[in-house]
Image 1 (tube, helix red, strand yellow):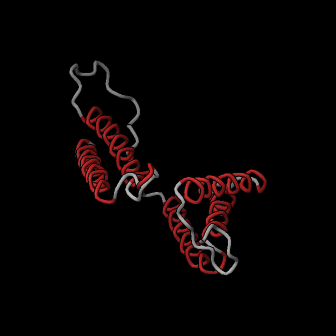
Image 2 (tube, one colour; image 1 turned 60 degrees about the vertical axis):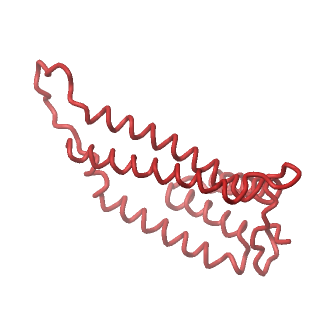
Length: 173
């Protein structure tokens, strides 16, 4: 178990380094444009910093779990602890992962036809309804809300045109 936690800590440490490098490289793209507009490096900076902070928190948690206890336990545990790795070997979780990957591939193939926003909305709906087993109306609500957020952030705020596909939906300029 301790070896598994050490490996987990190494993964989080590598992720902290990669996220920090991503944030540092973003300055080369320009964080802002003339007139104070958001530049192409803004999103990599924000996501790199956020990922570095979250990864550092996970690293700290992993190191704390791996640290030996200062006092030995007075009573032995009656139930063995479940291994986190056992969850990853669950065939249902693996099948779910492959299902989501297949849905993502279908969504990517739909972009030239439907446009990014429609394909993204359909992907979110499919994952919510079929993978997460949400009812149709709440799944549709989540899909619409997520699509509107993506539209607001990329098209309205960042002024990034999204592929409109044959339907012409999405802010292609």
